[in-house]
Length: 295
Image (tube, rainbow, N blue to C red; front, side, top):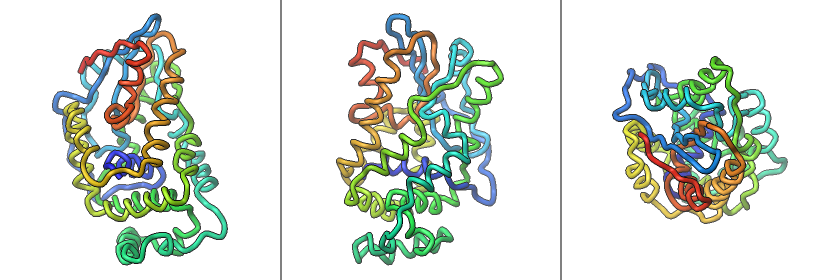
């Protein structure tokens, strides 16, 4: 699986389980600032901002260009506006992620992966008894979250809470391109074989998650989309079903949601959706939108 899918899995997981180290990371400043584009077509004159969903404390990403775009916009559009509702998100995860009569988690991976799975569970303070009630995609999310206890990051320090607070203070509406249920459904509807592949890849990449996150954070802070795109080409080839369901199909759906919009929306989505095959920028250009990099 490409790192982009592992990254998405990990960052979604961090919205479900607090992932904070014992000591906060030192404040950091962005170098050049995260990527920002102006998007235009007809009566649509808005912005597209590539976010990172979880951050260490003190990352100063609100550059003058981003603040100017936020001030000039008439509303905020997130991937899923209801993702910030922790109670709703957890309830949906439990509802969609659990099924009766599932085999033990270790029985869902090849024999050669069982020892590594056991180590990851032990290191993350969980066990097979706790995780075996979850479908494989949900168990993979929880494993991703538990393997990141040392990253010193959290959703509350991510981009979206800051954006939401700013738009609420300005009295501007907040919407979403999809719902949390749609996000989870991208995983929940995967066939068992694809879910098993997701689980195995989570095991493979758990130890390298900190290094991956650090590279992504550095690239994002500089607005270096080329470096982010290169990360997507590293490692094993993705399971085609997972890539199609979790990334490509969602990007296509987002274009359908954006097309009828008018006015000056500030659209903020994960930076990983703005690179790679059928990324959101290319799909919007194909629909006649003019997209100009402004930062």
